Image (cartoon, rainbow, N blue to C red; front, side):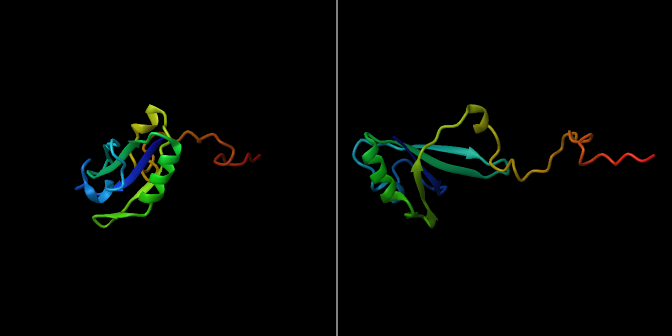
Length: 114
């Protein structure tokens, strides 16, 4: 099982005792940094557990723990398509700049008058 550990602070490293003190021997986190498009950087870690039971135990220990005033989020990692990973983190909040594709849709067309 792969465990996702999110909401890591900017000062977190793969040897940070605050975030990764409960990791069993031999489990090394892989820290990933993702640009949010506004100059900010989000950090999360992926950890490979040896078994599902050990992974669930680790999620229970890390979920809600604080590290440098950041509350950590731990859950099972869900992989996504590579195309989805390249999007900006705030793509849903951005206004649409392209042409409107619903110009001829029934909700936008004026009713026919004789």
